[in-house]
Image (cartoon, rainbow, N blue to C red; front, side, top):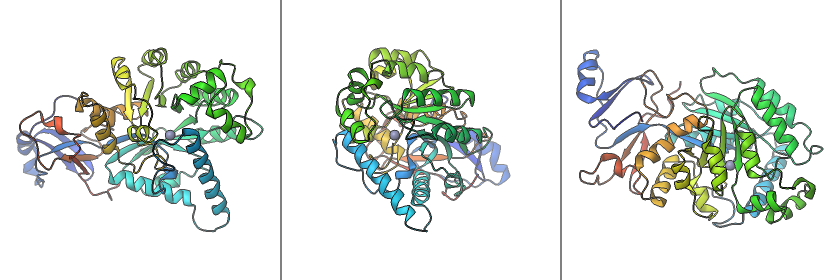
Amino acid sequence: MRGEPNENGAVVVAGTTVLAVGDFQKIKRDFLVNDFEIVDLGDGLIVPGWVNAHTHLEFSDIEKPLGFPGIKFTDWIRKIVQRRFQANSQESNTDSASSKSHAIESGLQESIQAGTRAIGEIATAPFDINDYTRLKAPIVTRCFLEQLGRDQAHYPHQESELTSFLSQNQPSHQTFKRGASPHAPYSVSDLLFNQIQTISRSAATPVAMHVAETVEERDLLESASGDFVDLLKEFGSWNPADYTGEMNILSILKRLAEAKHALVVHGNYLNEQELDLIASHPEKMSIAFCPRTHRFFKHAEYPLQKMLDRKLNICLGTDSRASNPDLNLFKEAQEVASSFPNLSPDTILEMATINGSRALGLPASIGTISADHHASLNFISHPEIPPPIRPTDWMFDEASQCKPVFKVESTI
Ligand SMILES: [Zn+2]
């Protein structure tokens, strides 16, 4: 991640920590005197653990995406709301451990097995940190507490909930870090959005928000029309006076730019002006692209090239199992490679690792292979390594396979 690949390279690992990385012959001279065991992984690529910048682990027990490919987004939202309602009522009828805790745990397990080093998680209340730390897994979570509500009377506790969540932030905690997530422009009132901004600014924590995910979101914000009107009516939160055009995507982005780090999730339909605004805050603003979820909803072509032209920090996310069959970030990278064949695999590798780490406000040791840091490594192989093209050129081929190098039980 910090230069050209090391051909015939080696990584020295003691316990779960990287001691050195570099040329195999040099490493052999420096370390073999200490009785290090040599493990030859064969022909392939050693890359850093993945950073999955956007997911919702509470849906990790869903077997297949809700609805069908090309489902109308608002119909999918109806299915999500219905599922959450059913889960809540089931829970209140049983004494069994919370199904949400189980789903989160199984999502973490799945992520680790897929070679994920860090995740950008959207959590909902009631929140229990043990759901994330119980496994003592070698995975770092930036947990954004989701906030939604168009009508303060229905959601009176959001402000105090977030304040209390962020007040427990311990930036030095190795594996668990906090942030805030105003859900989306169609589900958050102006008032709540302001409150979230103020609270997260004073706590100096990152913010993540779903923005410009659908065309209908723009219809709602700019002309108080489209599919979201019916949805909001159904939920009893329709108030045409809220949609004067003042709270539009550009104004939302301007406000997100005030956060310590702002992660714009999806951004499928951002226009030139909005992309320029993000580009004018390169240190703070990032975009999470969720390629297979994008395909599931059959959105228009992702404006990836326009983002790359503006040098935006683009990272990858799986989103949840409610719109994706699994939580495997390597498959997202393969999806990008097949949808954008002219894109360099090196760029995709950055999107899948270090860019995510930057977007989530995590140390640069996450998303790179660095001495003195956790040995979260993946090995990519190919059943038939093509003749001498540059080794990384086949990295995200459809036939390539990725496996974590170490056993998943290792703890930090
Ligand atoms: Zn999402």
